[in-house]
Amino acid sequence: MAKDAMFHIGPNQRQILRILKLHPNLTETEIACKVYQKTVKVGDMEYAAISKSLCGLLNKGLLERTTAEVRWRLAEKKKVET
Image 1 (cartoon, rainbow, N blue to C red):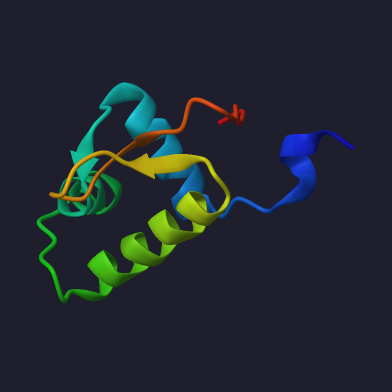
Image 2 (image 1 turned 90 degrees about the horizontal axis):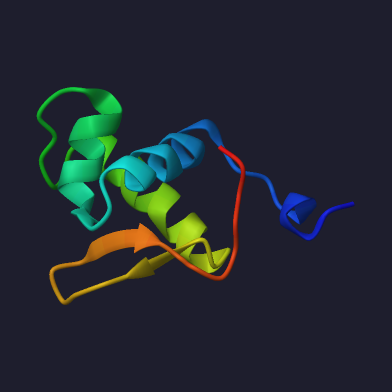
């Protein structure tokens, strides 16, 4: 079994990885708007779902926070096929 296949990547997480490949360095709100293709604000159910997905990807080492504004980008250490 490949090292990267040892954990599950959900549909939202896979979409987030695809978005960050095309648009590196986005905020949580910007990512949520792109995933749901509508305006999403802090406190919305969609924002909470994206936040949870981002934390999961962070814990798996696939993302990293880039600034105090909580911007995200793909981590350079691990490669995941999307």
